[in-house]
Image (cartoon, rainbow, N blue to C red):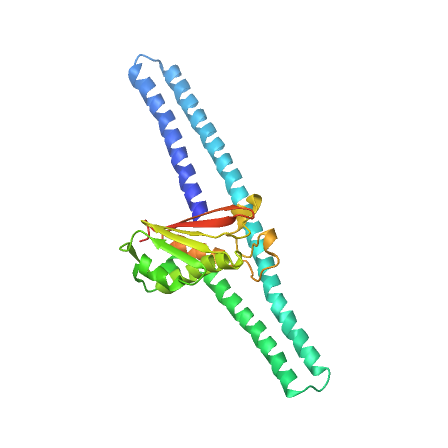
Length: 284
């Protein structure tokens, strides 16, 4: 919706500017050539009105075409989102139903019932987590920013991620900003978790340079033609099929970080690794 409003404002200013320019030309023609007869003046007025009408028509047509394309894109995106969400919810529900049916087919031992209940509980937790993510994705930017914020010292905050496979190298121990630490952790957990998951047993390098945090892995990478889609909800690159996940983590991270004003960029090379660059300079 925000993109649509920006487009509308842009075309409104273009229309006002074009109409104003044509009207100014008509006014200058009348002022600079006061000896023009009534017929010439009427002709100039008609030409001015025709030019303004043509400009408004052209701008309106371009605006209509652009908005139609934007609405179609939004519709397809929403349709894909609903389809993927339904699929992700259907999988654990089908697993729960199947587990219940198998358990009820015949009498089983207490240990077998316990194992079955554990599997059902695991799938139920998966549904709960997915629903929480979906509810968060439905929040607007204003709702995210209304959550309680605290002063975050980034280098200090990143120390919680220190483990055997993570190498953290900060050069700025004083950089700080205001943000909800729980949401920041949620965003970074997803990004760093992916880096660890797709890197097998290789190291993940995290660097803090000024306001810029870089997370670089040595994992499977992302196909170049799919790089622009990895932040879409439920999208998973074709080379991640053998890894657990539902493709919603990065979209959550992007929603949180951009809501606070952070700039996020991702680059990757297939079978070489992925780098996520987060600039917190403009976090408000």
